[in-house]
Image (cartoon, rainbow, N blue to C red; front, side, top):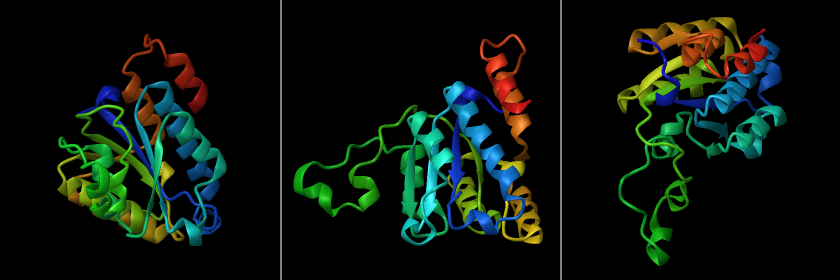
Length: 207
């Protein structure tokens, strides 16, 4: 099965200012995350970010956050290692019922009071990348698999503080049913053909 841009959403996990200096091969990882965000914007793929306890680890890197914002995406501040526990599924697949209005809305969890408007419904392919691969990225991906999303992990845009932890995460994710891909694989599967009207724009990002 190939990735389909019209059925994809991109989730970028925890590329945070105080975390990234400790991450293995951090410059390459951030460069590929930026490529993914920019490709998603070109291909009209919805994009979401997460940030783990941003008051302690800082916000996502400015260039990456700007790429998310410019694509109309939102960033979920979270306390749990898995973003699913803090409401990511409601962003990816908003509930059919509307949240109560007025005073009743305040009794809902914070992430449900003002959920972002869905850019598209029914997109089941979740393309993911992030840090740390063996903690927040992996736990989020495993729970999205349990929610019956198809999960595609972009390996060259993921890392951990150690190479061993990163690779252990990839092994476990593959065993659980996630597809392991690279940034270029995502690009060319979203395009499918050199005749795509946005081929040159995407090619310029990955050359």
